[in-house]
Length: 202
Image (cartoon, rainbow, N blue to C red):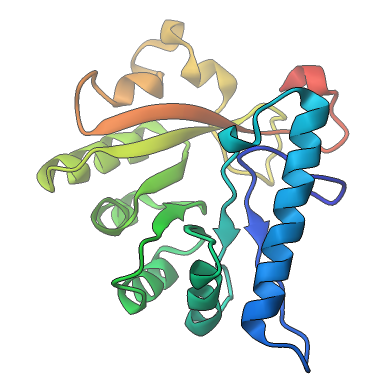
């Protein structure tokens, strides 16, 4: 959720709970409010709201609150830190939720992501793509991935250079790091851009 509206595929933070209200009721109210905004945005854009997936970001959120969010209907969860993801996923065994890794992922942590996560949103270099593919293959898993592309060329943000996603870039092509029919499922490209950049750049 951005500052001024809902963006499809963008995660939404789970808010702190105020005193005097039950956590479950506040989370349920927040979910209803966000979904209403998604519906309104889709109506303006001529899209079907069922095409939009709402992901609750669990960064810094304690397990008990995440569990209450899941019980309120928030079943897609996104974590930024792989070690935190491990703790939270193990603590929430038995709940029907899907875990998305949305933070910067080091190649030496690909093993954990391939073992525990249902999606990886931030594949931004060939070394990570190859290692994630290798680790998923060892576990006989097929993991949906998003390639992260830094179209704004901002040094403060992660993401592959757009030219590395073109077939003409040869061995540096990020897409080629996942051989066709192997242990991956390429779904979308997540792009980052400058806040002031025109929409046409995305």
